[in-house]
Length: 175
Image 1 (cartoon, rainbow, N blue to C red):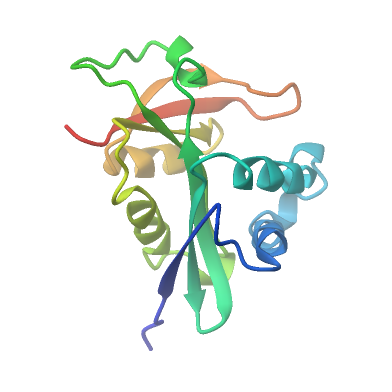
Image 2: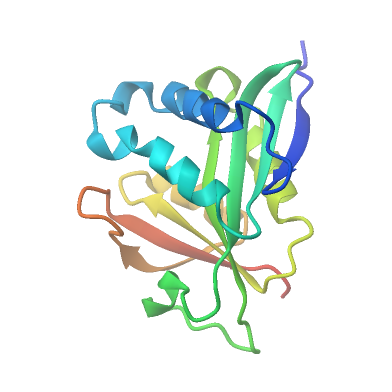
């Protein structure tokens, strides 16, 4: 049986009641085996932070009424693009950056191409020149997946003292 997945777009001005809790619940399902980690326990703070950012955009995948995963992010403020300290130096006047903060699919729906559909829908109409995201360095297969989607590893960063070390991945949106 083929699963029918419906993608819905949400932005800063149209977040329904319970939206942040839905993000938290999906995250808890995706990270169930790692919820004893303090960094993962702070996801509600990250959800509050990102949903409050100017230009916040989120794509949620649903099977009927059940959220199966999501991808979200927001444009970075010019001059405050944290990834620019890496070795990656864009050419041709690439300036504006969209940060992809999260792409996650609940375990039951994985390996169906949903993460790629979410990612593509999130970036489809972006006007920024570049997309940037972080991948835990202990997950090389995830990094390889993003490389097949056009990302390049630009360096490594540990944004918080209790966070994992991440590969910084950058993609040109308009080659």
